[in-house]
Image (cartoon, rainbow, N blue to C red):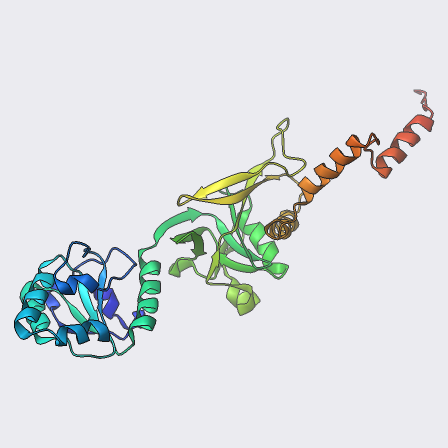
Length: 329
């Protein structure tokens, strides 16, 4: 409850009654308007939700007789309630103030109208109550796509990110990514302590904002693609066509996953860049790998050899080439 009164919340709330209940918990981002509870039917009042009293609710209460109003508000306040919020700067009924003081239920007042206040409060609660996870990884904004780079320590995640920054992309978080689930979206950001910073072996800690400017950083980004950097293993089968569709599970949400083998001579930054471009095309409905396979199947179906011109050229050259024998001296 105390967080709602913080200036940083920007909700414009002030406490008018029930200070003993400021330790009550708000556990649900959806607010509730009493509605039928003002008639005495309180079965659907839920603890953990903020109760909103607007002009319509207060107008209805004013039309009740003092005795009936007192009975209704006494029954309502006896439920387990986190708090009441009165909108439009209206004065709460005296009977409600009395019951709130006696039972330790906070009453807050805001000058905002009900609809905009509910939107602002819901957004604030969704952000505060979101499921959170801290993951050892790097988060980049590549062409507007949130790319989470994961892999074992020392494999080159930060070096890859630095190369991407040098190519004009933006850093969100290095080393530790704070991931929040808001609805069906995964939003990544950096802890306050490490924001804008990057640790590079041999160089130490650098500040990307100071080195590259404000255009090189972002405070948060939706996670839409995961690139897993893995050490190259001889003899291991790797996806050559891009038809394998793997997912990376984060906070019960699936994100497209690409496994990127790391070997000397591979430019990881360019590969991640191309992976981001390809993912953007897939989101727009175009999958190059599947389209290629469809064309091959169509060609085979027509009975035409599915050999690329370059392959035919190499085959002809191989047939026409003569073996060269070298003598050992």
